[in-house]
Length: 73
Image (cartoon, rainbow, N blue to C red):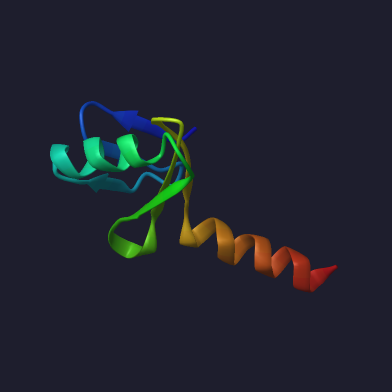
């Protein structure tokens, strides 16, 4: 399960860690109160915030797996 490592780091299910400045995360969380916000990390990992909290991490490895599965069907 993707998780937030206090105060401004995130761990993806694949084991990748994304680190950001605390002020960047605070600003994104504040902006996410009005609408969904995406913070792009290294290696194309994207952290999605909504209503002041991290709701998911979009992993490029998972996208590739899903695309291969869809092609096989």
